[in-house]
Length: 243
Ligand code: GLP
Image 1 (spheres, rainbow, N blue to C red):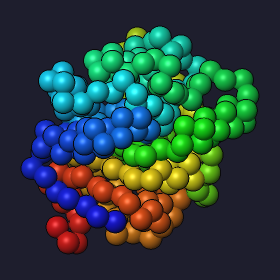
Image 2 (image 1 turned 90 degrees about the vertical axis):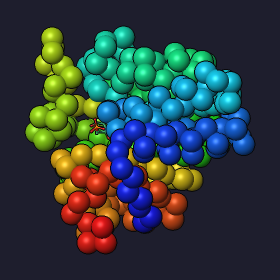
Image 3 (image 1 turned 90 degrees about the horizontal axis):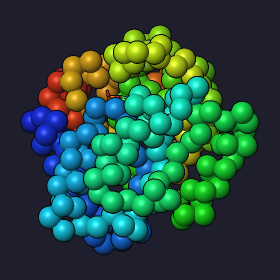
Image 4 (image 1 turned 180 degrees about the vertical axis):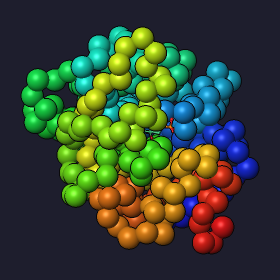
């Protein structure tokens, strides 16, 4: 897996934002797999900035988000639907009907998983999947477990993830479950970019890049994909042998 260390989150945002904008300029109906969390925010800002100068249009882009909390209305400010609208979609004019999410409130997770995989397929598959990484090596909400998952599924969040993300939930308790794309579905993207910054990601990054491929570190599955680029800041790269 190829990795690059840049000075800080802002530099990573410029670099990754430019990769995405250049892709969209070449293929206007690019299918993007998108992530939430702090890691992709500078990338989204770069996309917004280049859209505002008229260098790139997201009018025909289709998006599929990685995951969504269960038992949380889509309109709640802590939902990933809300996050994406606020941090990207509303600012670059992506048509709402071109943006897709798993339904965290589904009563039939199997049917919801099939719907999402089929929809991705009908749109020609994901051209570029953007990922962050959890402190425990999760991607999307694929928590460390005994097996790699394939399609989308409902997951019980681990204590580590709840501890990391509960800072966003001030007025309600953080949901304990989420719907997430599975590892198999993530690996079907043609290209993948993973962003990690900060020392709290260093252990997960070392396990992902230098450890064995194991569902105990879900991100290690990316070693099996031929087109992954990992963007790190010096703190996230600090434990790597080659660094
Ligand atoms: C959440 C999301 C992940 C994201 C992770 C890291 O758990 N489900 O997709 O990668 O947070 O978030 P951050 O970038 O804020 O560290």
